[in-house]
Length: 172
Image (cartoon, rainbow, N blue to C red; front, side, top):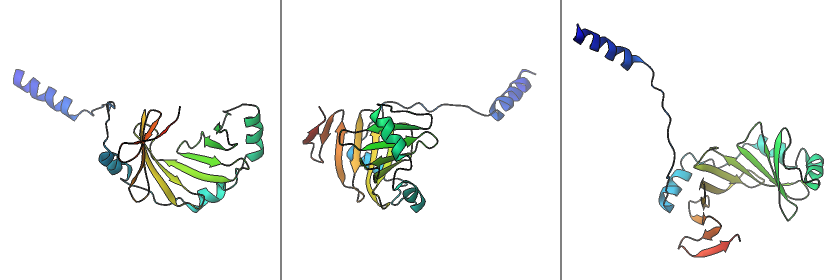
């Protein structure tokens, strides 16, 4: 009887769905592993419809007023503005795209994020929809590649390094 109960219990437990969480943390990349991850399922072009709809900021006048008043968030979008007068927009109904505009509201480039959680993989396109950059970000570290797979730069915190590990730039 004990054996029969054990078998029934095993069958019941083994037929139940399993719920689990993937724990993320301590992710470490080398340039090669970052390149491999960044270029897995790479998108080399952007749909023309995305470019055409955003070639000129559809909310240019409103966004300029918001920027002038120091407002960086509305009910439908996040705005980041830059010292050169340019700005970027992320619409809350589609967090995968970041649209970068010059001070006149003309598109300068578009980022398409493939993921919204770390590691964040993103593709940067020029105003014509051509891929110009592939990146992968892990919290305090970014690997940025040219479309041919060559490392453009590797950021660790506020410091940018080249392929040979030489400091290129320091944000502060």
